[in-house]
Length: 205
Image (cartoon, rainbow, N blue to C red; front, side, top):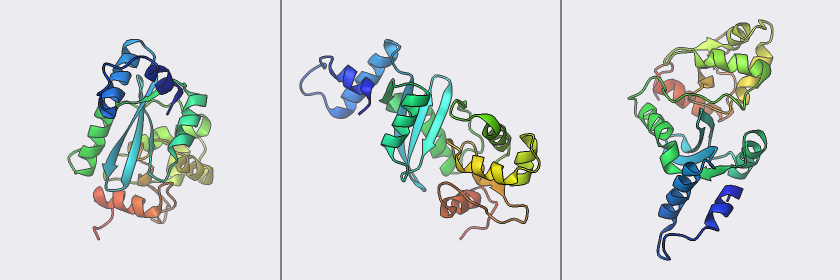
């Protein structure tokens, strides 16, 4: 539970029989109304496992796979963005809905804006270049390094992609070696293959 959740739960609830889900949404609405909520998070089930989505008023901040510890994400966001974090289905609904549509094959581009605050320096240039790679197409580590201003920094570009806090939406799965090799992927190569098959880059299994 985040610090904000502790603070809001100290306020008397609407009644003794309110369930946890309704209470959580009531807390998130109260936090938003009182301008206390800087970061909201919510989960969705996907073909790649459970995803946790973090959003701010500026846009999508982070997407974590189910092997990423939630406590670690909350600690990092508390330090780098704000401690005013709360679970909220309502606040994350737009981003989660777009991800559902993507996995169902009904969406080829995301409309939710991206909040780039967790990405800095050379990595920012690499990930902005990656964000421009269209659905169903691929690029190379060298190319995104070049677009970020350092043509010889393909290895550093790989490191930047490995730390991408917004996989899928900032599509680091579309970046390959120049010879067509998959390279790496922070979510594991099975997930990278799945995403490339979903987009028609690799043949289906």
